[in-house]
Image 1 (tube, rainbow, N blue to C red):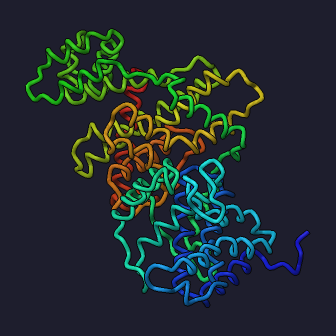
Image 2 (cartoon, helix red, strand yellow; image 1 turned 120 degrees about the horizontal axis):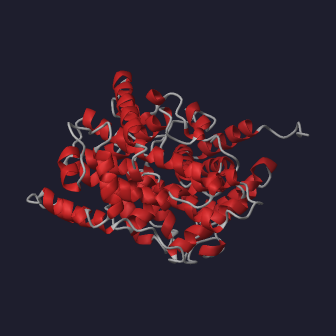
Image 3 (cartoon, rainbow, N blue to C red; image 1 turned 120 degrees about the vertical axis):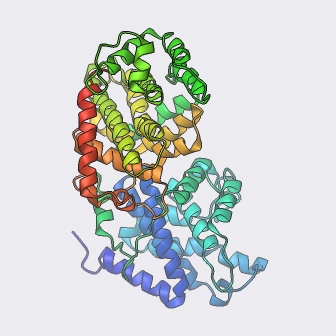
Length: 500
């Protein structure tokens, strides 16, 4: 039963923020910015809804201890003396003491107490090292430092964003956790770092965001998260062998860069792989490409589908093998993931054509591989744990969804792809994008959404109003264009999805 003498969480936050503002108006704005960035960055890391809410509140209240320190020390210009520094580093302990008085905020205590700890043990107040610092404190440390360095105030001239990110890169593995620092740099440079305004109670005004963080998936349990992390660690240690794309794909990539490459040369390379040869001919004979006669050789198939498209088709055929699993209960999910990737590739290609981006085959490939992390995690799970009937597969899928973006980026990097491609699985999820977001990421976000809505995706990934999502708005895609693209993708999928 609620204690009537205890204020509601909403009233409590309002009161505490008011106290911060009375002491220092800049400090409140800093708290609101840190809270907003923590919320969005935490979402990209796949934290649960409760953990995301905790990070938001910790961002709002992490510096409340400053209000009990001498203002002449807190607001002093220039470097503090040793005595002043000793005073300043007490603020996390004071902040912790303040919030510990309120039962609804006690979960924030370790995050706030340790948000100035460094992974190399040189931080404060306890000099903790990597393994002992809570993940929330590591996130808050990173976000708090970034905001402090990039906002000008009377006693400090701000760094520009790139200079601040360069310093974060330099401090990765020392002050900041290496992996978090890398993800944060991508996050800030990408479309994710949009800050919604907050009202006078520190609540996010954009109600859509609150709804978007309420993911329609089962709660991720500790054991399911541990299992997926175990799989990721095994990949890192090469204990699980990464699938290898056919050598034909790499050889074609090499010869495609040469403008003098002939159809005969391409055909000779493709014919080294019997499976790819047979399927390329089947695609050339599908309703999408069918000409006046039946194609029976690779040499005849290439001109019919086009030289550039031949490269995409060969890559697609090779990619399809990654989605194979022996476990019957995962075959349907793998098939859905495959069809989603294929449809996303076609939609991305159509968007790039409509918007005259050029490099349509590049956009197709981005759509094809954007969920590669999800596929490989599920494949490894089905090989290693599928016989364990005590595990809830819905919870495992939710854990995979949490981890798949950063894992997918790591996989493409390990395969040797460019950083432009690595960013696609890492950052395509959204939902918030800045106006200067990379058009590749916006395109793949929208393509994935459209693919889901035309029936190629997992049921829980439906975008009910795709025109309202930020990527569609920023790309200036209207309803008519979206309907045309959807119809084109459906036609293509009907014609070739069974062929690959």
